[in-house]
Amino acid sequence: MKRTVYTEDHEAFRAMVRAFIDKEVVPVHHEWEEAGHPPREFYRRLGEVGLLGMQVPEEYGGGGETSFKFNAVIIEECARAGVGFGSSSVHANLILPYLMTYGSQEQKKRWLPGFAAGEIMTAIAMTEPGTGSDLANIATKAVLSDDGDHYILNGAKTFITGGALADLVLVVCRTSPYDPDDRRAGLSILCVESASEGFEVGKKLPKIGLKSSDTAELSFTDVKVPVDNLLGEEGQGFSYLGHNLPQERLTIALGGAATAEAAIAHAVRYVQERTVFGQPVASFQNSKFVLAECATEAEAARLMADRALDLLDAGELSVADAAKAKLFCTEVAGRVIDKCLQLHGGYGYITEYPIARLYADTRVSRIYGGTSEVMKTIISKSLGL
Image (cartoon, rainbow, N blue to C red; front, side, top):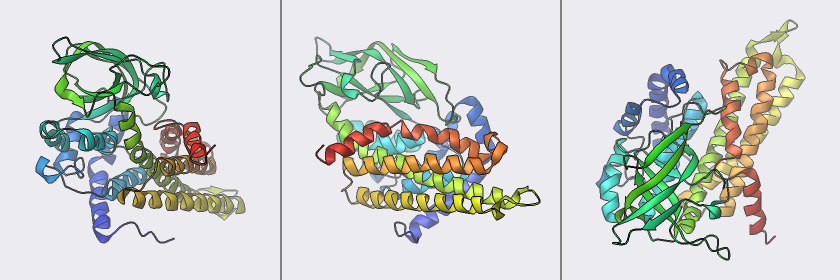
């Protein structure tokens, strides 16, 4: 079906991104996977070509775009090429809304120019070893000093994307005692500079996929965080997280739709080239039927993702709609990629083939940003259940 979400400007941008990926990412991506992240200079390069700060206002050195569709093009082109830009998606797609919505003018002036240039890379630290998706149970604690000048931060975080190279980490922490009658109260977001004394990057967690994006454990031991680094108001952290989660989940949904389409493209090429019993694998009815099913499911996922993208740009994407998009698109991606890998036979299990990397990379999409089970809970609540 013909897509209608993009204009000629978006497609011209797509051509630029595709050429950039083919020239500067594909030839060295395997080195990033071995290292666990791109070199720090790559983020500065993304800033140089304008791919990090597209939605940063022009006054802070960004592109001033209000639409998320240019970001979506990058997601699609990375999926098409089977590469990643390290933690840049978290930086540009997840962190920026927090800074733009809740940051003070002083904070924006201090951080956004470096943010857009790739000089200041960011991460967000929500998950803790004992909390998982239960953010209301966060135990990392920040206590205001007697003179009111700074917070003393103590605690630990895990599964932090970009945590190893981040210069500024948005840490979700408890700034008032835990209240069992209102578990969501008392959470705040502190912007912690990684150079702070007591801030430590722990183990870099080995993963089955997304190997070019670092995931780390972080710890905070009596870290002094200036009160000027409090994002928004104290005690409003949980509501801030809820406000920004729809865009995060749409980002994952867009990735799901794009990876499903990429898997189909890889499988179509493979079955046309591979022969079994003297004839192309594509000539067998099973191959045709499996790919027809995959193409239909992927098309449905694409339509849902595109609709959600339009709603986001219009400011109308609800928490429940974003949950539906993430649930459907990531589950479709899992099914489609599995079927496309099967069509590759034994070669589908060899990481030299793109389909194997897609299989490993996509599995986490049903976990991070809220598991599929959490998405179902959100959707069921929207039904009054």
